[in-house]
Length: 89
Image (cartoon, rainbow, N blue to C red):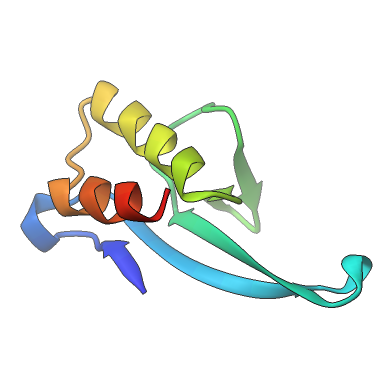
């Protein structure tokens, strides 16, 4: 499920939720929120894998903080992304 997609309502971020099986922790399913190809340069937690930047959060609250950093940097993030993540935090 996506919270923001590039270009929709002027969005400059693509944020979605996913889950994965943690094989190191008895196969528990874990949720995560991803900011794909994150435009924040040198932000804490942003990783570079195969030439792509992304930020992955293990809670909705952490993704909210990340999106606040986008807004502080002047990036367009639709309000509905904040509203939906706040409901889940």
